[in-house]
Length: 279
Image (tube, rainbow, N blue to C red; front, side):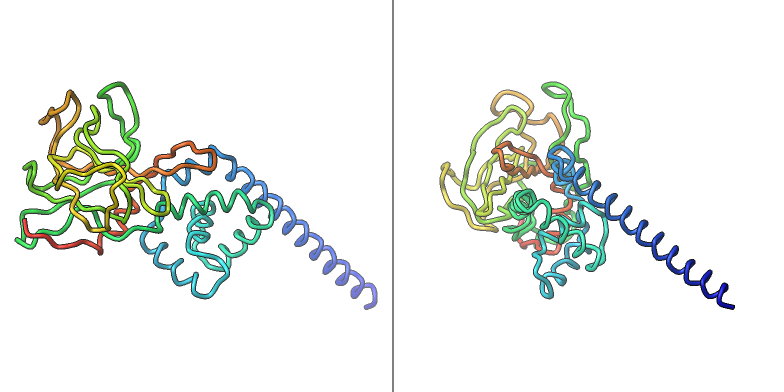
């Protein structure tokens, strides 16, 4: 009987050691994964993709109310781990803040630059009813070949009615006009820098709502211009593709280098926030 008890005790101790070893292995693997993902190239690529479904974004807003972490922390943890439970994300965030505080702050700043100032979907709904819809898909980094082979750094919002100058385009954020005028690739474009640092690039416009000046302040929802098909040539070129709005989003990292982000998930989050215009 005593022998049996000793065997049971030894088994319990052995099991505890195995569990401890597994936990330690899991911790080491987790730390290694975090370290790997926080390497500049890998993390920037994850952030560029911006794979944050709307339901996750709404969920982390609820987490923020009961936690020391912000929703940008939770977005970061989700992007790095693909986990969704608050307890799992809290655990990862504690490790990130413990071992990589400055890197997390840098990444959080870039996240905030994209998400912090969003107000409206860039193309309002028509009060005239049917037949004036828009659509978009996740065309991030699809091949483009005008001017050389390259990846598509943006999302195209397509017009159901292929008529230039009909669909209004509004600013998604408050901000300042940073760039205005013609680009060979972008046609007539306007670039707005939001207060948190995001650069929102609206391209292929038919024309502008008025004569904007660089440095001029813009309010969220303000009319910028009208959807068109300008670009892919010298100034004034049109008709090289269907009428649409190309939306690009860019931020600067801690070194000042510009990073392009995938706007698709941002646009999905803003679909319920469309203004209504008469057109």
